[in-house]
Each structure stands twice: as structure tokens, then as C-alpha cells.
Image 1: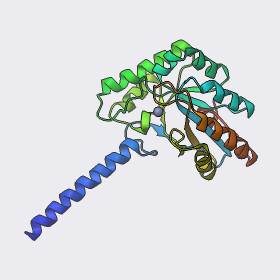
Image 2 (image 1 turned 120 degrees about the vertical axis):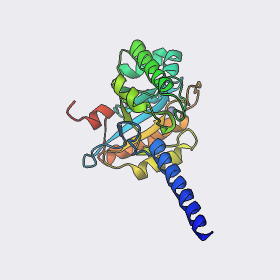
Image 3 (image 1 turned 90 degrees about the vertical axis):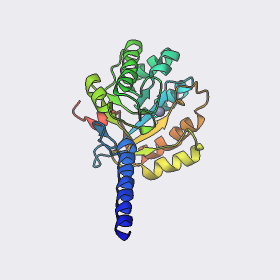
Image 4 (image 1 turned 45 degrees about the horizontal axis):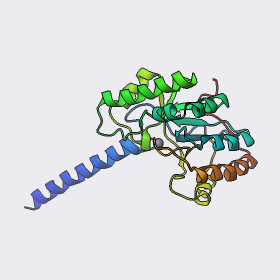
Length: 239
Ligand SMILES: [Zn+2]
């Protein structure tokens, strides 16, 4: 009986470890289990990368004004559906010199999806972004940071590298002050900061907290000596 119990315990512990490992593999910011992925850049260089997910949205133009004011270039992970809904905004983001990334077409969770589904989501976004803006994304960020079997292969086929984040602002939920505090407290050389200029693929009439947090934190971080770079500039300094 004792023996069986410990055996069962061993099985349970093994299962828990497997679940823990899968949780990390799928959502861990440093996980590369499902394909090449970055979550920070050179920690010795006083530079940061601002990244915005889920756009373009109806309110992105206001964010572009704020970034222009501080002469900041950022990276926008766009969803294909949003690009088709707001094509002029997508073109404006590219025209201002920001980098565009791929955030799937319809913003689904990718876990438990087939490799074919995952490839189609990534390929359709890639085609839409290229067709409408002329920019060819080289970075991919999975919705909710959830990767799965097939992401790595799709990345390779489409010429994409995965990017997670060092700091995520939770700006879709938190007020600007709390987002700003989190960003200011965790900003360090090489950090990739994730904020949002949309809300999934729904129209996003209000991203006020995001814009307010950008206007509050960017000048303070510049005063601390940080330079803001696009992902290609911060991850591939020779390009
Ligand atoms: Zn997203």
C-alpha cells in the first residue's frame, strides 16, 4: 500500500511537472520551445524598445502624435483584420518610420490549434500588412504570448523571428498611473516594453491609458539616458 501510494505520488508529481513545463513552454517569456524567440536585447546598452500590440486602431493616430513629440520610433505588432479595418492608420504608422510586426490575422489563442491554422493566421497577416503598407514584418508576437506546435515552422517559412517582452504594461486593464509605475520600475538597458494600441481585433475607441502612460514615462526614461529604438535596431544593431 505504502509503495503504491508513493508510486501514485510520483506519477502525480511527474504530471504536475509536465503541466508546469508546458505552461512555461507555451507562455514563458524566455521560452524558445516553440521556435526562436527574444524577450530582451543587449543589457549593457542604454536603449529600450517600445512595442504596441493589437493595432492599428481608431485611436492609434493620437499615439503617433505622442511618439512624434518625443521623437521616438517604436514597433507595432499589427493584426491583419485591424489593418484591413484601418488601412490608412496602418500606412500612417509605417510612413512615420515605425517598424511593423506580425500579431496574427484575427488574434486567436494559438494553443491546441493545428499547425495549418497557425500558419494561415500568420501568413494572412503577413500578406495583408505587406499589401497595404508595403512593409514586410520580420518579427512575430503571439497573441497573449501563447505559442504552440507549428509556430516555429511558420516563423521559418515566413521569415519571422518571435518576440515576447521584458515588461508588459497591462495597459488594457490598468489606469495610466499604474502602467507608468510598472514601466518606470522595470525599465532597464535592453528592455522590450509591451503596450497596446488596440484591443484584440475589436474597434478600440479609447486607448487613453496607453497614451497617457507613454507621455508620462518616455520623457522620464529619456532623462535617465535611455534611447528608444525599433526592434530591428535594438536586436540587430548591425542592420
Ligand atoms: Zn495582442
